Image (cartoon, rainbow, N blue to C red; front, side):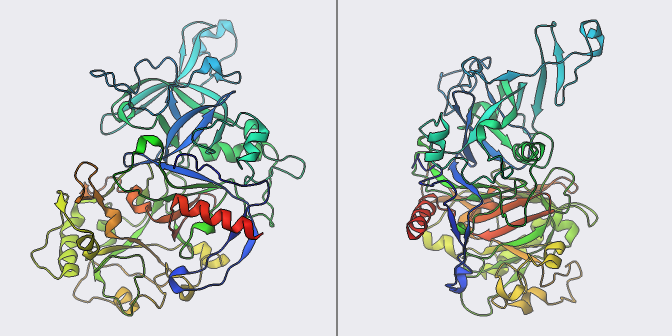
Length: 536
């Protein structure tokens, strides 16, 4: 389980095969040169993380992949008793603190405030505030505070890094990284300059103090992946651009794109051993994972740092299953709510953020009555109640719960440039004939609060096995992890259970978020990749 990494790949040899619409039984395949770096995500306690190898020689730091924040940070040597239970002495974190003294390439930030101008010109902190103790001891201090009470303090630092690779084995040399495929899926910076992870210097927070969840989590730290200064992908993109990179028409690799594919393993697994449970793809989206064609939602606030999608409707479909569970004319029960209530805020500009670092989904409190009514209709039981209390369910009972279909605003520019698939060929589009389009698109004259949707909007399905989470302590006991708790005007969140079972493409430059139903199974992915390489 623990040594998935980027498995069995040789330089420039990885091939990708588009599986077509598996749900439609299409056997057509298309081979193309691989231009993606795909590696293992591991399952934490409600979150997913990757291995980030930092320094020279590299030291492993496990970090949560978080599309809701921008900073990478993990404990360093000054973080005394970080990740340790103060009462029992139990160690929570998987890895020892990063020891900066053991890295020959580590650099700590320095700064000089205006009042110390007698030492020389002012040096400002790009992030954080200057802590100037003396001309020889100064640094940029970073502080992060979270709504539920967690926090951390760090010194802004930098070092060379590589992500992913084997979970248990450090790859210190270029030959070893090449042997395990680390870096070989990254696009060349230019014809004369191939990409090398050891040329990439990441700015991060060297944590000196932790409180709350950051102290007790399984992972050492966090890797911010939103669209703000300091995020991992944006630093990587800037590295490409500063070295003369220009995206060519013949390359699918785009350093401004990445994708997350989340699986969930059974609660009996020992997560501390490193359980492969999904994939992170840098440079695009890996079609080898896909069961349906990728469709694109609009990122309605592309400049504010978050990946925000506009929710246009919610439907409940009886008896579980993926986005299309077979049969003809499936029955849908619509949640009777306006777009303002659906998105939890006034006006038509906002939406719900896709936050990979948040375990659960949080929607507007005012949406709950309409959802309850649709839930009763979908179950055929007027006394049924949607709640977040523990409940015993057999596997068959679980699958009888409804699948929740979220209709998101489609990406208009992808329709114009042809990258959005035609509704007739993609089951993720509202207009696909496999859906009961009469029920999806019908007008409801007696329900004035419902907004219109059209054939070019997209559907993201959340089956019951994704929103119902089984207890690790009490097998067969489940809790629904969609919470209707957010006050009107707050920021609603689609958490990791919304991402589950999809390969989700985050494409900031084009202002869109892509969704393809995917198996996301770590072992299946490695097996499919090996089989594909053997056929070349």
